Amino acid sequence: MPAPPKFLDYVDANADKFIKRLAEAVAIPSVSGDASYRKHVHEMASYLESQLKTLGAEVRSVPLGKQVLDGQEIDLPPVLLAQLGNDPKKKTILCYGHFDVQPALIGDGWDTEPFKLVIDDKTGRLIGRGSSDDKGPVLGWLNILDAHKDLGLPLPVNLKFCFEGMEESGSEGLDELIHAEVGKGKFFEGVDAVCISDNYWLNTRTPCLTYGLRGISYYKVTISGPARDLHSGVFGRTVHEPMTDLIAIMSKLVTPCGKILVPGVEDLVAPLTSEEKARYDKLDYGIADVEHSAGAQIALSDDKAAVLMGRMRYPSLSLHGIEGAFSAAGAKTVIPAKVSGKFSIRLVPDQTPANVDPLVIAYIQSEFAKLNSKNKLSIENIHGGKPWLADPNHWNYVAAIKATEAVYKQTPDLTREGGSIPVTLTFAESLGVNVLLLPMGRGDDGAHSTNEKLDRSNFIEGTKLLGTYLYEVADIKA
Ligand SMILES: C[C@H](N)C(=O)N[C@@H](Cc1c[nH]cn1)C(=O)O
Ligand SMILES: [Zn+2]
Ligand SMILES: [Zn+2]
Image (cartoon, rainbow, N blue to C red; front, side):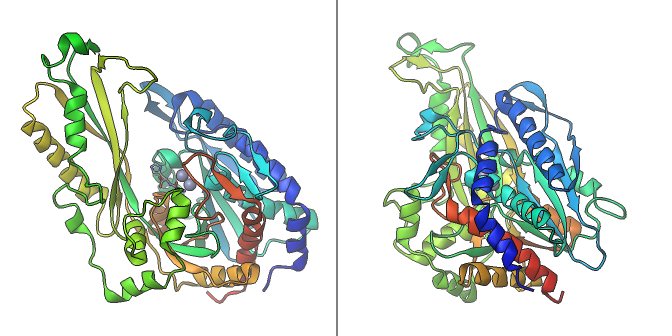
């Protein structure tokens, strides 16, 4: 059943209202990774809860307990479990999204205030932290409820929503909640399939459906020695320096061309078949796309399939930062007393945190031992999640292909994403249903980066896409 024209017309006619709601959401700086912002993640949960209730959903805000962050014990944000419709004749679709965001400061290099949505009429861009990842897509679902409520249209399927506020920080507490809500009479009972809109097209022109995600293992390596920061003129070449040790270790993790140096880690990767290789060759993607998204001509290879496989089917190790290092302006001559290097490995089949973590820990310990340093080393695994692959021939994907063709008049690419959404695998395994990733934004949205944006057309057509997908799901023989 195609989406009714009056739904599609409503979305066009109410675009400004939807953008205003996105501006309200972006204005709440719901950064999950910084304890000082935690109250805003709670504020964002309350904002969404009240919007969902106004739009007719039954909502439960489920507390997840406490966590220790930056040395403080603080409340985890609640998970919102919401529901609309309970008609046994209709399919039930679970939609997941997250309302927390990555940190953003104007000083990071943003051209505008990150938590004020800027509507650039010339380019059609809606610029602000979380516009694409993931507030725009979450609000896409709300726009659909809004349209159906105002038009007095019944929804084509029963809807369940699971919105969390810790996705950017390891989804702490979510797996336990999901496991507790599976079973007879529990929230997730009756879910036929899952749809997640929380990634991006490969490029700026071709919509895609995504059937795979990399997993992640995130590490913090701390080296400490002196009782306090020291004067480098007084102590340089007289003591073991934590930063020197840390840089020595971090330089042994990955080559500038991306090869992971931790012994055994690359050996765990499932072999490439010629049939799989052919899939990458076919995708609508070029070196110009990666360079456009990165904003510079810095692709690791000129071979399109090699670049795509680097993102989709091989692991990567990225160095993220050093906590405790001198980073301000000026030329402070300090020897920092304690520094923590942060890096993560994006995992692919057959890697898991359980088989990769011991290799990483043993390697760092052995590299540290070679330094003959009297400093102290500690290694923490901050969070982890396994990679995920789905069956793209499932009816859930067939419905999404039809919806994409109806809205964009294009057949979508079938992609695997390099990022991680650990809950995807939890849903697939604990509910035993197919999970689909149906992205709203484009490959150049700059998620996690400065000047993150969502194109106005992607927000509006993306809302139509998610709505049309629900109609196609209702229609399809399961
Ligand atoms: C793909 C998704 N929108 C996303 O950005 N996920 C994050 C999840 C994460 C894991 N550790 C910290 N954040 C990502 O892939 O980085
Ligand atoms: Zn993200
Ligand atoms: Zn996201």
